[in-house]
Length: 588
Ligand code: PEP
Ligand code: MG
View 1 (cartoon, rainbow, N blue to C red):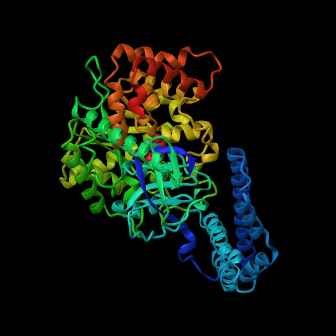
View 2 (view 1 turned 30 degrees about the horizontal axis):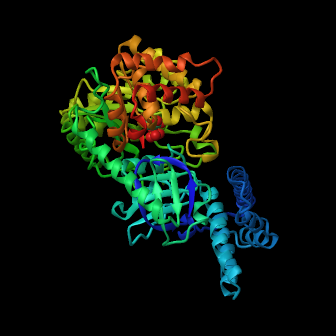
């Protein structure tokens, strides 16, 4: 029996056979003729991709050595050797120079040739090398194309998906009923596969480094998304303990949803809890888990996995249906966030290749530079606002200019609708996500242009700490309790209070028992999270009074100067555990 520790990414437990997904190696790659004067550029692309792949492999090897102290990094060292193989390099370059093939097709052709040679050999060692080739090929292609090509995962039986990493497009294509859980080498608790796993209520563990090479397809494993572990070859007593945990978690969820509305405090009063949703992901379970509204509708998912952009009518129908659904929840509200593409959410056809997409023309920047897309989406949202209590939210706001420009366009679209006699909510609220440090720093100015702020800690932590939210090797830096992040959240909340506008947190840290409750204590008006976490946070809030929250808000301020993110987190945990004696039972 072996237990591999990873990041507890989506709560819940699963046991079952594994399906090892190897991604891009299985899908067709673009093939085209490179113009004669572009051959050198194509060679340069190829070279860059190989260098990037090599660097990634070296990082992986060093993480493996540090984390496990094991010597079985051999498989990746072998990958490095294949990558450095002069004959393979020469062959690939030949396809580009002689046949003027694009780099992706050249890589595929070399890999196919080598695969055929290995497969013909009788020696099982060499036949096994085919998997290594697949892996290397996939890595180089990923680096060349910038994002995964959205392979179909052919699942036939309920399984736990084990993968290097999954893109949002791959994840949303999976048949929900056949996915028992996710376990990935890469990723983090706020990577998009993580958010989707939470939205789909599928347990997940990420950051497992090399799990794909440690499991055999079909073998049965135990996956514990609550504590972040995957157990291979479990023995009888481990299986029994695991089943007990499953039972306890179910009981707690049931208990939490039987009581008062989500977010009700012990002393009365509340911090309402809303759900984050992805269009295309079933809404079932949101009401049952106690969501009182929809605090974040990630509209960009309407753009994923399709060749054409959604039309105004398609968007309108989706927003209207979501608004009607939200009307059935106790607070009846829905906040539709406008197209938040870019970074790791790449949409075929409209995402251009940028050398640094996280700092590129994304989200509101994209919308402002593509007015037709912006106007169409605004029209669809405004039309839907006649069917429920809808708010509009702009993603990745980083300066006042963006809000000014957006508000001119919004007024224009509103007057178009008015002159066409199309009904919409004339008092519709408009808000800004605060997820870039600059926005938190100028929150006072931004507050003059909007009716609410929603703090997106997933990105705020990433941009404050300059630590990729999806990269497990910098996960230690990615902590919402870092004093720098806490300062920015405090500034945002204070600015909102001064301006008399509302402020919430919709980043996944809201679903962390220690951190989410801290945001409530620091004064946010509501929290929004994956609905599977609502019962948990609600249950903790039900143990606290307003006075407790006021005291809790002081904990990060009363630690010694120079305390680290982890020390602040630990101080908060200690305070909460002293206040709620059965906290560990609630958290299991
Ligand atoms: C965030 O950044 O915290 C957020 C809620 O947006 P997303 O996770 O979709 O980037
Ligand atoms: Mg974000």
